[in-house]
Amino acid sequence: MRLRAVSFRYSRRGPWILRDVDLILAPGSVVEVTGRNGAGKSTLLRLLAGIVPPSRGTVADRPSTVSYAPDVFPIDQPFTVTAYLTHMARVRGAAPGAAGELAARLGATHLLDQPLGDLSKGSAQKIGLIQALLTPPGLLILDEPFAGLDEQTRTTLPLIIDEIAAAGGTVVVSDHQNQLRDLPGADHWLVADGTVTPGAREASPRPAPSPGGTPRQAIIEVIVDADDADEVEQKLRADGYLTRRSS
Image (cartoon, rainbow, N blue to C red; front, side, top):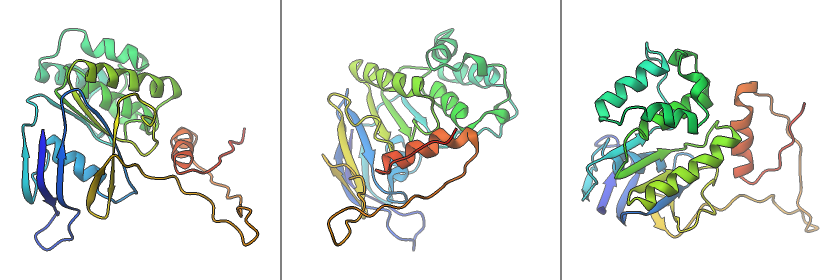
């Protein structure tokens, strides 16, 4: 799969989000995409998935089977989890039992009878992953898939990604939390200033040193909903901050 001189903006007179991007994605590759919020990571992923067309340039040789999990799974749907996944499995032509097997592996079996609208952020993220994995993808696009996941699922997902790549699928992951930093063989792209730089990653910020050379530090108390605590803490740690959880 190749991107040639791809540029994108959301309106005719809007600012360019990406400019003259040239990239190659080989079968079996895994790519971790990093960059600051608003840099264009999600836009790049939507271009790769074919959800939006480029404003200029071309995307060639996209695999025939593309799976996509957005950063925010749309839970405002009048279905239970089982009804939704059954419908998606039928649409995708998935093997019988695929949804149940994935739910068990991702620790989501207890969610199957729940209405989609009752899911927490982390639970909704698991259902978004299951629907994307129902059939073996030639191209798998995951936008911030680790946000809100429990520790067990954060450990399992890289194993699934590695299995898909070993089977010849291409995987692209926007990963603010750097969960794929140490995945063997993974490539890394940095999105910044409208460009995409292969072989580069976003550096974690460091505290500014004081005049005496010792980093200046301050403690900021952040109060969040208990269901969001894991996600917030993971994002802070990914940005290079020390965290301390109160009981």
